[in-house]
Image 1 (cartoon, helix red, strand yellow):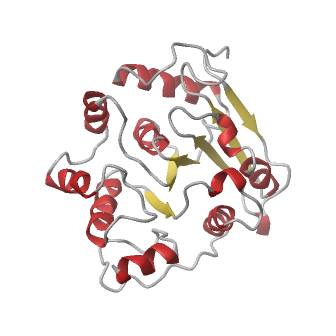
Image 2: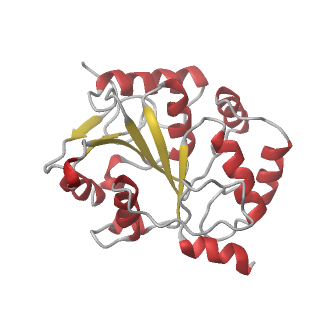
Length: 244
């Protein structure tokens, strides 16, 4: 299918471990970034039996269109629909999303549009859209999340909703409540720039593979009862929460 957006598919070069079926993942880079964000990570995932889709947002990188942020919900919905219909991997029976920074908000919206999304992995998630508060609000309203005191309290906590340095236990629980409304498994990854230098020993790659291989160690939650066992929080972040 001819597309106005840049889409590239990278197919697994090896079979997954233990005769498991191949995984499929869509990579959502930061708004204003590009598909090259994940260049080091892609071949590692292909070697582990994972099929990968990358793309560029409208007007960025190799995609056509006017450079800038999305102007409306309909525009982003059309963009994501084109992404879905133009990629065989995206249309697989089961796919995951891996997103960084503001790409987390777009990935979350994508997950509400297509039922084959099995889970989202957020790296340094920033659930907002810069420079356009109205659009950010409209996008939130399009996702089945409660626009309520929970969200307002979370915004007061920090405008950069990360899980890697200045998020408190209370706001982490609140963020988890919000994201769970889409009935998906949510994974927090403690890293900001490491993705650009990913290698086979990187914490990003090891955690991603642990999830797909069912070998992940989840710390005991103790008093954080709102966060379920399938939610991965890096131990550094977990320890930081109790130290602060």
